[in-house]
Image (tube, rainbow, N blue to C red; front, side, top):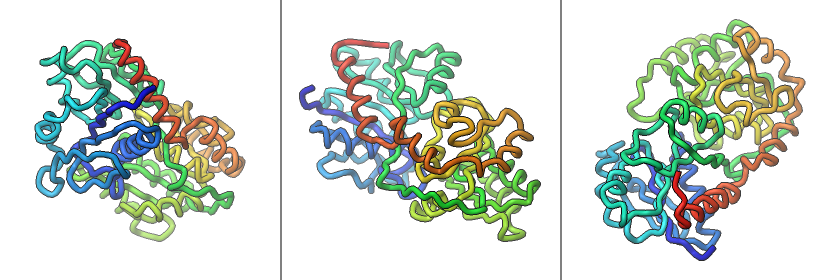
Length: 345
């Protein structure tokens, strides 16, 4: 494939890459970096203050100090650049660029959208060339809105994580403190079993802190159950490397992917979760973690997790391609090629 001019549209919520929490923005960063390595011209429309890879063009959108989350403002600031690119690839939440694609169909012909959200977007056009991040994610969008999608799995950057065979005695929770991630139940199960837990909960500005407050209150009475809140990336990796297991008690079937699951597995940390959403695409039951069907079963698996070999966890991520930003970029390039040939879905 000859060199392409590719525009990636990130969210208006966080800088690229994110300073702490932020899965979508990290994926955009890795994709831009790898596409550039593959000799393509890449630009990213993202907030002021973003630190993009070398030779990747930055189209500044919003000032997060005063305009956080305003995707309408972001659209106004990158709209004038759209004509310069062969492919418009939208990773934002609201997909507002599709309003221009609808109004000027002969002008903007080659585009796609990666959905990172659980629920489907109401696109203003038919056949928006949507891409989902797991097979379960694709099934949910088809069921909820009748939208056809391709699948490109997310990835982690292996250089940002470290493998360790050594396991400690403390369980770990890492995710946003929202009800669908099950943070309160993670603390309660550890208290019921009288086992130690580290709680890491990265919040996005504007989220209601109710679950975080409950978790912090449940943890505050002793170091056995420790509330960390938001931590640095380095600290998160340290916790992955020593945790007995990652607890991921999601309460819904709409989980798109679950980057924290892959991060933990790469570090050799088994994962215990429910058999919901895409978890069976990430975890091999009984080999790299456990997929529970009930709460009682979840607790039983917590006590069986020493059966899991950390090497199997680490190697499974590599085998599945979840630790290869290059694989992700090449998967997207295959889709770009189909779009440029006129394919629509």
